Length: 96
Length: 358
Image 1 (cartoon, chains in turn red, purple):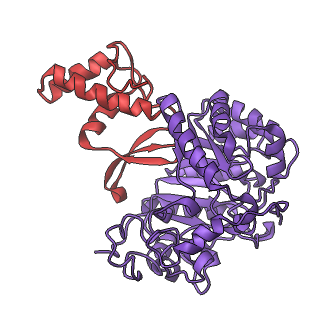
Image 2 (cartoon, helix red, strand yellow):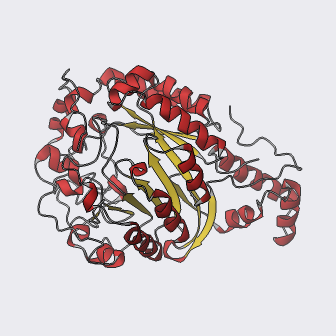
Image 3 (tube, rainbow over the protein chains, first blue to last red):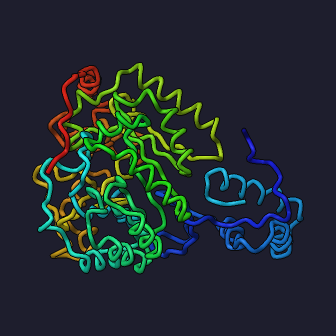
């Protein structure tokens, strides 16, 4: 059941589930994703993506926004963000 | 620099040693602290604020059974107010649906419920408490109903290790998003019951294969965390992520330990939150500096490429098996006394459990 690269529908609204929080912490050197009994360091790109996963923005809007913000080709952003979000969803850190 | 001071990430708050269950593998010390000696909720609130200021992100509210504290909601609320991610580690016995709802309102982020076996009768026998299994199932359902993420903690040993598939199936059925296949670690009461709990090497091999298959089968559905049981491993576990490096543990009476079993090591000087701030303890308490970094190491650890990967393994295990807390964890295949671990894994008794009792 390898779904890590399966496409994400553009009208899906990704969100962090209850029990998963993105927080900034100086002592730990920046942004971290807190999850049940786990802590993940979040890099700059992951932070920018996750901040947009509010449950109200659609996946399509998030990709458009990122492509515009970083003046990057939409196709590449789409592929990278799909991989990132699928990976997080597999670890039960994101709801799609 | 090997002794650079990191900020701790996690705080294990042992709110009480009281517990209705009698699990023979309990990691609490054999000498349990009485209720009268427990820290009050105001002191816990101060500890949580100090922990957050120190960089701690997650607090694990544990025990004993934390539900034995009548002020658990107040304590949880204080941890949440301090900005900590709050995790309740419970047997589920002693926490009512009403209390759980209040805990959720107080900001509880996650619940971990221990389940002793997938077979109700066996589960109750292991817990030493009739009816425990049914109460665990009921509370797990409440957790899921309140939409709080649930982890099932399945402690595995000889009596239940052949039912890993059934345990994961139960966790899925209960609606857990994570399951810990936690092989017994031999400290405290588990050390006392070691010969009765020890699985055979055939069981351990089968268990490893089962976990691998289950992870593939349930990929994306449930997170399955499991590690090789200590006495059958070739490499030692990086105990608590390195001594005085990632986490700290506050006992019911306020002593601050680098790990929950550290009091088994003689001559370590522990400081209490009653006398010192957490920051002072983290940086300066003799017990935290005893095995911090790599300077304390001997060979074969000292020149080992993995010295900052596994940090010499577990000090308490080194002590329990070799009699010397400074020795390389004998679980390591390079340890001079590794043969002792191999020999102990072959010692299996059939005696009744020595249940954990006050």
